[in-house]
Amino acid sequence: MSLLTVICPCYNEEESVGLFYQEVMKNQDFFRGKGVEMEILFIDDGSGDKTLAEIKKLRAEDQRVRYVSFSRNFGKEAAMYAGLEKAKGDYVVIMDVDLQDPPHLLPEMFSCLEQGYDSVATRRVNRKGEPVIRSFFARMFYKLMKRISKTEIVDGARDYRLMTRQMVDAILSMGEYNRFTKGIYGWVGFRTKWLEFENVERAKGETKWNFWKLLVYSIEGITAFSTAPLSISAFVGVLFCLLAFIMIIFIIVRKLIFGDPVSGWPSMVCIILMTSGVQFFCTGILGQYLAKTYLEVKRRPIYLAKEET
Image (tube, rainbow, N blue to C red; front, side, top):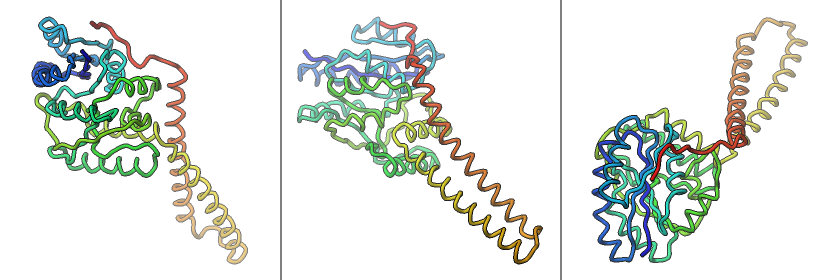
């Protein structure tokens, strides 16, 4: 039989682990009918609660449950990479443990693979239940990425994706430290089928993604799959150099004609402050790319496993 590996990143999700297992295993009869066995690979991302203990209970009852436990919290991107690296399946799917990725879509997703697709991805058609401000900035992020990046990143895209082994191996070949998986999916290509579904609220617990974490994550995505900010900063630099040159000519001419060196100092201060602000902004953009280069060249591992099956 073929094997389907269900990768499930977990961070402080002791209330959701058991429920997730039950919901996912409701699909086992369908897959067995297709000649496919299922296994669940939990990635404990350095949880501080009893998440690992709950996973071990499931492991004791069902040997199809495997797990990797990190030495500390490395983040969801590292957890997904670890899952892909440890997955043994001919087919691999990544799902959130909070059941916001509906397990009942798995049969339909697999049927799409049988039609010749390399992956089946999912996207939310709405953001019902999310804070309005958070939803607004999320939509703006996807619109921005569509304009400045050549890599396709679909609005509302989830990490919930069923893939063939060939696509998984392609993703693993990208061993970069600074990972933005939504962009990596688009970069590696392959034939992808998109499924849409209504937003589902968490079954248990609270989200670990606050506004600040999402903002940092969006910056990671922009700098990982677009060099447009560097081009913008260069353009702004040239523009302000031109403006500064014009202002110098203006000041010299005014001095020669009117001979009043004092008048106009408030506007001059405003110009200096604005120019300095743009310089710091452009320096910050360069710093982001330089920091990523610094982290890449150190060649540190993406994660460290403390315990695993």
